[in-house]
Each structure stands twice: as C-alpha cells, then as structure tokens.
Image 1 (cartoon, helix red, strand yellow):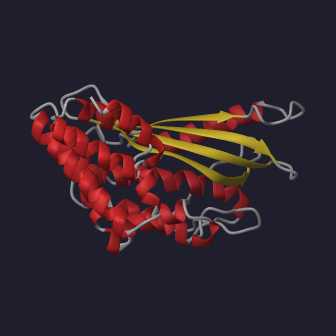
Image 2 (tube, rainbow, N blue to C red):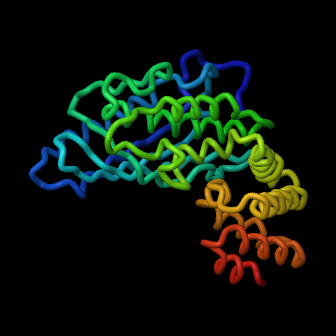
Length: 297
C-alpha cells in the first residue's frame, strides 16, 4: 500500500466523526456537541498515528458515529460508538469493509472547548473520565491501521495491534468506565485486540491477508483464482470457528461483508456456490437466511 516517495507530513486517515445528540434533553446547549464533533475530527485527521507517510489516495477511509446520552452527572455522557473503515481494492473503485463494529461502552466527561489530548505513554492521563474518550478513539484508530496493514502484508499490522493492546493495558480506570477489561463482557475492546495478539489464533492474520490481498485484490486480474482464495479463507474460518467457539473474531470478521460475499459467489460454479453457502450459513449465522436464498441458484 505504501510507496517509497511521499509528501512529507501527510496523515494516515480520512476520518469523519459524527456526534449525535438527539437523545440529550433540550435544556442542554447543543453547541457543545458541534464543538466536540469538530474537535474529534481534528484529533483524528491532524495527528500522526504512524511513522509512515501516506499519499492522499492512500489515506484510510473511516467513519465514527458517536450517539450520545446524558447521565446524572454534569458534562458526563454515555454513548455508543459505531466504527466503520473500508479498504480500497486494487484496480477498482470498490472499497471493501474491514471494520464495521458498534461499541456500547463509551463513557466520558467533556466540557466545551477542552483540549482533546492523548499520550500513549500515559493513556489514563490525569483525569480518567476525560481521557477515556481519546483513549477509545486512539484505540480504534490503531485497530483500523492494524487491520489495514495486515490486509496488505503478512503480519503487517502487528505493531499497531501492539499499540492498541498497550492502550487496553493502561486504559483509564474509574467508576462507570468499562469495555477495557476481560470481565466487562465477551465482545469488547479487550477481547478484540486479545484475539489478534493471541498466538493460538495466529491463523487470523493469514485470514485477513488471504481474504483481502490474495483474494479481493486479485479479482480484476483473475476472478476464478481470487474466488478460490476467498473460499479457502472461508474454510480456514470454519476450522477456526470449530476449534475456537465464541471468540469475538468469528462474528467481527463478517460484519458488513454479507453483500460482498454474496456478490463474489453468485458467479461461482454450482459446486463452489453450494460449498460457500454451507460454510457461510454455519459461521455467519446472522445472515444465514440470505446466503441460503441468494446462493441457491
């Protein structure tokens, strides 16, 4: 993805943050949320997250939707955060979803015009409730970069998975903050990066590289062999799921991919179509009915 000649200073992300305050009472000054939205967009897009330099067309497209709800404490908010990122496919105008996830455990304090700061050497900061917001966004930025890099080269995202894990290990701690610990749930920030760093699950890195670079990137060049690679990835995922049931990655990988997978296999041979449909119905249960119906012809 990265080239050898770059414009010095170009950032990695083409991020868009939307802050929704519709669940906040009308007595609150809504200007504070527009200020927060502007500050978050600046925080993500103007900060250097890697030592690499990206050309404009290499920037990673991503969206963050922060859906706020007020709490009993002044200037303290509970929220869900939807994170979406796409990865361009070679020789096409198509971008394949690489992250499509909703985090329900966002809890933070924000006062209008406060500076949004993040220090990876002191993640918790001096005020945990305020630091939690930037820690969460920094975590997902590193995960986006990690998955993007992992899709272009074998184990390419390791350095950024490690950065994300460092944020988890040093995350802010105080009453109300959750999502950073193993005991906070089965599908949270802790488990997402744990799955990618767990040596027992190393095949996940092969799966991302195989799906995107050996599969999707080759669709224009040789659709038949590219589809065969995607089917091989599904087989690996099926085996991984059988050996490691209820891991977060089993569900995470497929979020936002059903339309893409149906399109890929709708042109397959009948044998491959049946095989893909059978596997997908087992490992992407949410969309099982769609696969059964749309890949039966």
